[in-house]
Length: 254
Ligand code: PTJ
Image (tube, rainbow, N blue to C red; front, side, top):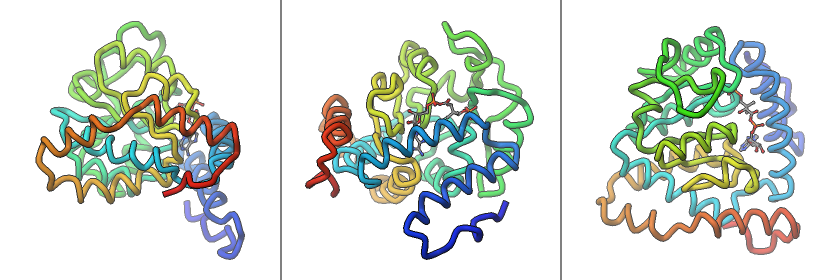
């Protein structure tokens, strides 16, 4: 860890370079998979086309997502190797504010990676992280991707799944869970099945959600429900796709 100093402060792409450093450090720490770098590169390409900014519909999605988490009976935040490396501070703080259980759920599952991620989140203040020892399975999904905790994702009503594998997102949807997906690609299957697709970089979206959580947590349920009802997932996906395809960034930011 501690490679961030290697990125020159005055570099025009310092934010992007820092994120890359975090992922490289995540691999060195045994948290992030090498495939995570490829996934991040794909995300960067979409982000570039979005102007590396949070478009207005994504900001609306963040708000609807926070309201949904606050209204949930049993919200769970599913954390993988990219999320843990990129935004551990915001992940822990957000989960605490909305009362979500954190569960480490990996595409390339191994006990060592789960332990490394859980320790990293603990070091950032998480008091409880569901990690190894999961014994429940998501129905209809083969391989280790299906392994979840009975008291975590399996019994959740709302699950936040950033940078998610499309198959698993579909299978979670089939279990009747309300899914919130953070994915820069509005065409990914994960975004397509999400009740709330947030087409934004997690490095911007999650800190925004963390800040919003404090503000929205004082609102009553009726007000939170009206925020959720006003959100249109199809429109949010279409807005992001139009911005990416046309390259027209006029008026898309907040
Ligand atoms: O840690 P593991 O083993 O669970 O593996 C995690 C990865 C991300 C490697 C795994 O879930 C995977 O292979 O994901 P995919 O299928 O490549 O999908 C990742 C999606 O996240 C893609 O649609 C990317 O565009 C998007 N993405 C990548 N980086 C970001 C992102 N979306 C938001 N913010 C990012 N920083």
